[in-house]
Amino acid sequence: MGKWLVLLIVIWLIFWVLRSAQKLKAKVHHDSNNQIEDMVQCRYCEIHVPKKEAIVADSHFYCCPEHYQLYSQSTS
Ligand SMILES: [Zn+2]
Image 1 (tube, helix red, strand yellow):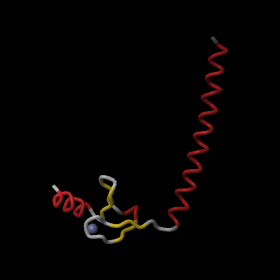
Image 2 (image 1 turned 90 degrees about the horizontal axis):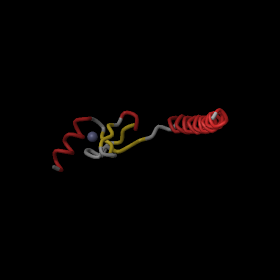
Image 3 (image 1 turned 60 degrees about the vertical axis):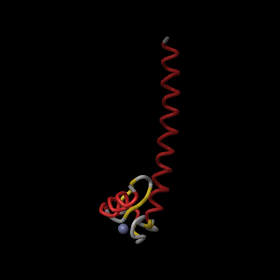
Image 4 (image 1 turned 90 degrees about the vertical axis):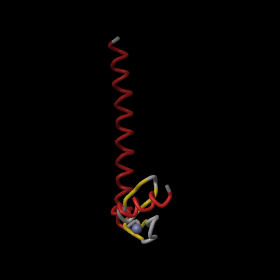
């Protein structure tokens, strides 16, 4: 029983190390993306806004919450 527990802990540790390595890689990738500011287009007025300032709704971008509301009202 003790042997299985040790084995489980070892497997868990390997997974944990792999996962944190992946996380670190993703973070580095994300940071380098931030240097070149990602621009997205508002679905409503088609203006370009920085991605981090954009409103994301239904996997589309909007420059402000008002335009998300206006767009969803115009389609429904
Ligand atoms: Zn807009």
